Image (cartoon, rainbow, N blue to C red; front, side):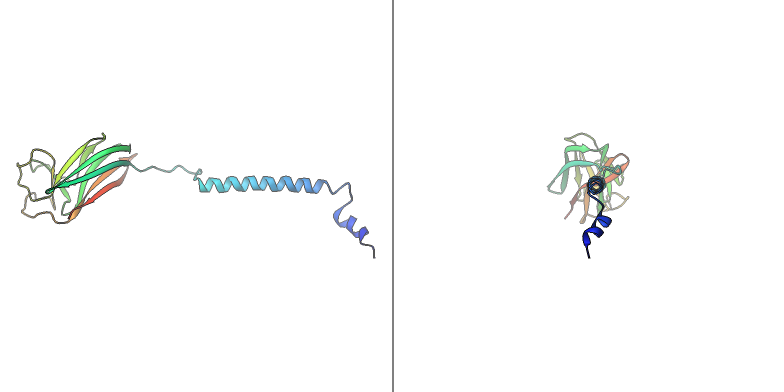
Length: 167
């Protein structure tokens, strides 16, 4: 049994064999390039736009019943707000009026907001905010728990940028 005769029928003659390996290599390279592009698109998330969150550098300084929040830098933020949670869920102006769940902190680096969380009588402060646990200011209840949050707004989306836990 002579297998050379079958070999030429299965593989092809000497003139026909060169076409198949060249086409095979071209197809394998093309498939590899397409596959690499698809994987790169998923890994690098090039297929869809991603919304960015607000970013800012915030520092807190606590001193005898007061917390001062300072905006050190702003990367992305249309507006910054200061708010509270827990026993500090309402912020009042220094005169004890205009209570709200959040107050504007502005959009400038170097902006500060002082929050007083001890039971402070109205009219005793010249600046800053007084926090209380509800919308009935100065009910004699000292703030014992909660946090002060800096919230950033960017492209209509709000994100808690930094938080300071009250003791």
